[in-house]
Each structure stands twice: as structure tokens, then as C-alpha cells.
Image (tube, rainbow over all chains, first blue to last red; front, top):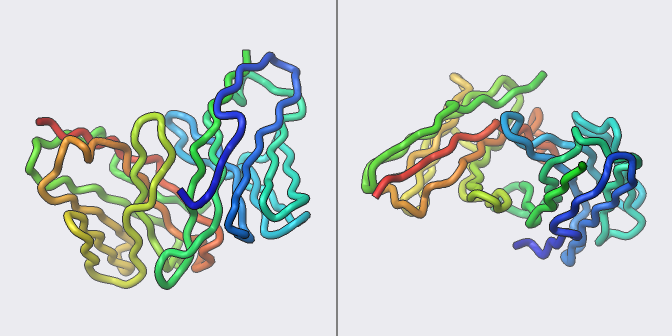
Length: 114
Length: 112
């Protein structure tokens, strides 16, 4: 499971409230990612990090912010949740896969915004 | 916009048959390709990776890559009901493996 945990695993919140999702890894991987997965859209990259305090936007970053103050933790924040942010959120790390690296996923967080 | 497209499915095959999953990609610079399996309600799990033209076999799974045609496929031989899942194809971004482009997935059902 690449030593990745996500918390919470399920969350129901109301429109307009702030929400923070946490991704924790135990194997000192440099790259970490946040994706959302929705029916008909597949996996879409929100933000990624390539080191402590180093982050960059993905294709669907509007309405989301991230922080990485420690190698092991990557936080995703929805400043003011909207119903369109109801989704399953996956964290991933870049790990070794034979001669190259690829991404390994955490268990996911199911977020419902009412 | 770099894209990875998969046959939309859903795909249904009888137990013991060969399931064929296909994927095309638009980024000619992509070098590495990956197949993930995702069971309902679970996270994607890496099952195959391929970097060179040709076939790569791992047990009942064979990945095929044709860079000239920008085509990747996954064959599952002797399909089992436990293979029923959504299969995601992914390619690196212009040869940089820290970013992947994912297809939307193909739902495979293997009927006993």
C-alpha cells in the first residue's frame, strides 16, 4: 500500500465550510499528489508537491489550496466547500516501479458537500 | 491538451475468455505507460508498466505498446470474475514520469 494513509476516509460537510484533507506517507517520497475522481471524468490532478513547501497546480486547482510543511504530510484544503467539490479524493506518491517511477495511491477520501 | 483515450466500455466477457483493453495517447513524447486496476470503492492499484515497443507478460496479463501507432493495450487471459474492475491506462507527460495523464477507464465484467 506504499505506506500512504488518508484522513478522514469519509466526510459530509455543508456548503461554505472549510475542509482539510490529510495525506500521510511513511517512506520519505519526494513527490505527492492530490487527485479527484468523478464519474465520466476519471482521475484529475488538483495539485502536486515536489518537496517541502514546493507545490504546483494541476488541471483542476480552482477552489483548492495545498500545503506541505513536512515531507510526510500533504494537506488539501477547500477554503469554502461547494457541492461541485463532492467527489472521491485520492492522494498519491511517486515511487519506484522497475526502471522508472510511477504513482501509487492512498485509500481515498469520500467527501460529500451538502 | 495531452490525452489518453480508452475504449469506453463497459466490456463484458465470459469466464475463461481473453479480455482486451485498449488505449491511445496523443503525446508523442510519452515514454512510459501504466495499467491500473480499480475495484469498486477502492483506490487504483498498479498492475503493469511498459516502456518499450512490443509485449510484456506478467502471469495472465500482457501489456502491448506500439509507439508508432500511439497505442497501448492490456490483454487478460483466462479471465476470472475477480478481474471484474475498472482498468485505467496512464502515460507519462512528455517522458517526465512525475506527471501522468490518465484515461477515464474501462469497466470490465467477467461473467461466471
